[in-house]
Image 1 (cartoon, rainbow, N blue to C red):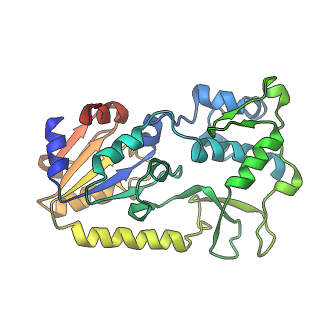
Image 2 (cartoon, one colour):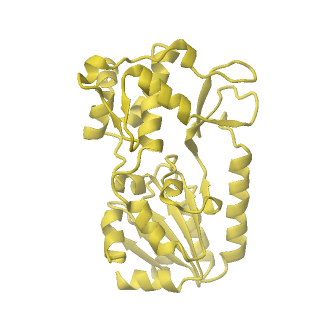
Length: 294
């Protein structure tokens, strides 16, 4: 652990690559008790057992679709993560030359206080809607609409942002939102959809392109120097975005280091073994050992 800490402290720059495992470590589980607490009605009707599967379900109506999605959006975008994993990571890198590349769409980095100018969310944002066509390349903030949808279903939004069922549980919860709350494109009138990369209709708006440019600038300025590629919780679903590029850039620069922290998936190719350190560990446990409590 001290070796990893020393490498990070002595790096000229740090490029953080973050996948779903980082948010899972922070307590954002898509299945189990957290899922059942808020989606038991949808589980009973449709038979899916996690939020990921629910996102691909064909619901009976747009009103039901947005009842489901408003819950998933709010729980994973606007509720504070149960564990301060992101805050702990920021504590370590805040005074360093860092940048974050992530496939996560929950914006936990931004909520934890990371500099927005140092973040590139490649796959979208739970907090944004776009035209489903799309007829134009613009996205729209959805928090106020999502909160209205939740209240119309019967949920209680607490003062601290937490989401709770009413006293009578799911007996007091509706599985639809009012038709007037179904979001429609202000330009063409077609239904809105999530700004999540799932096909070629994904809108890369001005904010997305500006972040992509800042990421390219960071790479051009630092990729040939003493850089550390710090990969956290990146699995095998989209390795071409973070994992493979990190391996390739490490191989191309003898001064670079690659560090992978991932429970059950901490691997590295033979070609860069001498430049790499892999830790098969829960990320929260790793960060606690790296940055002890004062």
